[in-house]
Amino acid sequence: MGTYGYELKRKRVCSIVDEKSVTHTAANFLKDLDKKFWFSIKTVQTDNGREFTNDMNQTEQLSYFERVLKVKGIQYKKTRPYSPWQNVKVERSHRVDGERFYNKAFKSLDDLINKHKRYIERGNNVARKILGFKSANQVNEEFWHCMA
Image (cartoon, rainbow, N blue to C red):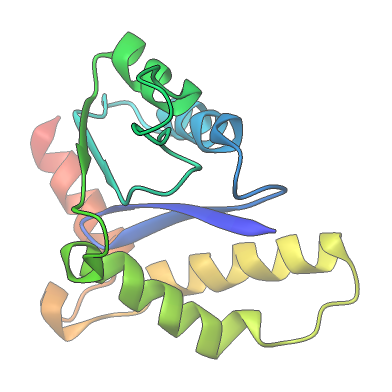
């Protein structure tokens, strides 16, 4: 099991996925994410994990994830290898999620998925100092209202 996530103005969209190591899973998450928003994604940044990119020492072919990005015209940025500080938000969210969510017991896969959905929704509705004491959902609503 793994998790893919997306953040816009601190709003998180995450999904429990079956396999973390397959580029198809990452690409399918990207396709699903694209359907959830009325705007187009301009740039994606990831680490150099095998779920995103092929080992350039073994092949110069693009991974499925990279090909989907290319077809969609999305700019792809990769962090430098062994540089977790370049993806500090993701690293921090993984640590916090582990502490607050993933170390719990779940009765079934459906239980995990349902509780994860509630966990992410609740997090998007918590007021944060960095957002002017508003929730990520409130900030995003105001942002998209101004853009319309």
